[in-house]
Image (cartoon, rainbow, N blue to C red; front, side, top):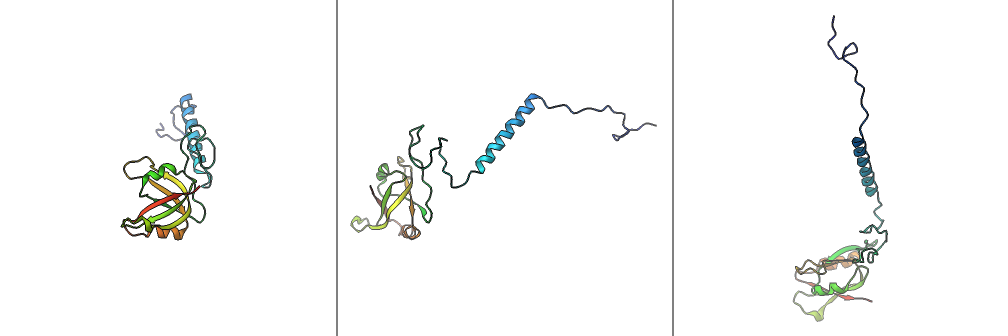
Length: 166
C-alpha cells in the first residue's frame, strides 16, 4: 500500500530550510535601518525646531554651514499666522524673519494719507518669494486674533504697507 499524500507518512525527502544569503541579510538590514529612521522622524515632537541643513542650530538666523537666508519662525502662543501681500513688494527686501513691523491698510481708492494702523510691532515669521516678479511674494505675520480679523475683513482692493521697526 502506497501513501500518496504530503502528510506524516510521505516518502518525499525532507528539505531543510536554507539560511539566507549575504544579499538577503543586507537587504533586511537596510530595510530595518530605513524603518527605524522613519520612526525617529515621525516621533520628533512638534515643538522642536528643525533646521533645514541638519546643523542643529535652533531658531532663526543664517545657517552656519551654508550662510543661507534665515528660516521661518514658529507661531507664538496666542497668535494667528496671516499671509499679507504688500502694495510695494520691494519692502520685502529689507524684512527678515524675527523683525517687527507695523502693518498698515491703505484704502482701495489709494489715498495713502488715510492709512489705518492694523497691527503695531507684528512679528515677521517668514518672507515668501522676496525676489519673485510674478506677484507671489508675501509676508507671513504673527497677529493677535482681533488684528487678524481686521486684516482679512478689509474690502476688496485694499492694500497693505509696512513700517519696519528697529
